Length: 289
Image (cartoon, rainbow, N blue to C red; front, side, top):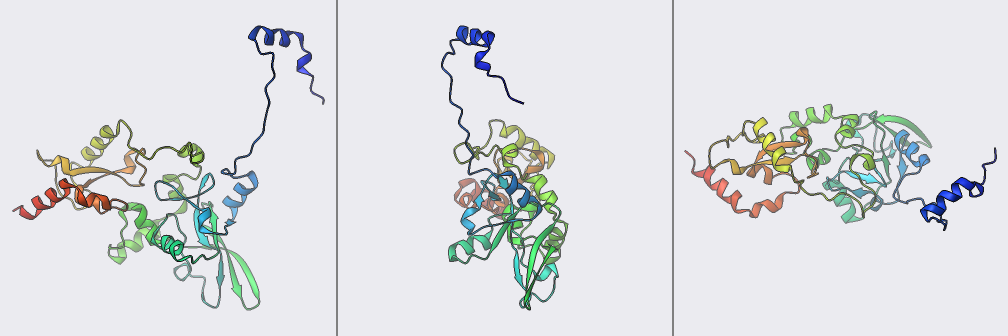
């Protein structure tokens, strides 16, 4: 079917004349290199995309990882059977969900393994077991990196926790739940559209309202150490902490009431150590009967 030439339509031309739209504009099609193509997206959510360097992976303001316009998981696809005798997930390389200590060290030491980015949410990863003259590709379950969980403070995870508690959190972690908390689609979730239009990771004007609600829900007790700060003169020492590090994400499930001391111990909050209120709070605790 051939489309008509609309420029020959007398009524349309009269309308253009009355609008003063005599000059036709130019239409230019452009494809942003920051966005996944349909083929890339299909590969990302069904298998994975090989990357040449960790520099291709973007670290988002909340500490999670992105490839172009999608939040992703990062893992090692090729595994030698000479070094990994079994397919037990405990003995296999862990997958990453955040810019944790391990990845930071890898970047600093220029020790790049062959990493793959993926956004599959069923908990399986496409792994190549290499050795004995052949390669077997299987869907393999892997465990999440504990350093990543600590970086994100997922369910208040800390490497200092007793091992049984850490193991329990790792076991209950699912990729599907992770993507519910930190959505894959950055365009719809965070408004990310390249560096120029990415949202500023800063507090919203109504943060105080949400923070007060979080403290009320905790009965003005620190969710970390249990210190009761509801008395007059102590409330200023109770803060509302953004669990995922995104300061404009004020959902109730993303805000946790923490005393200033527990708040200062969260990832990325070392700068709080110099705050006068922190020294004053710790002094009060030491002098308390």
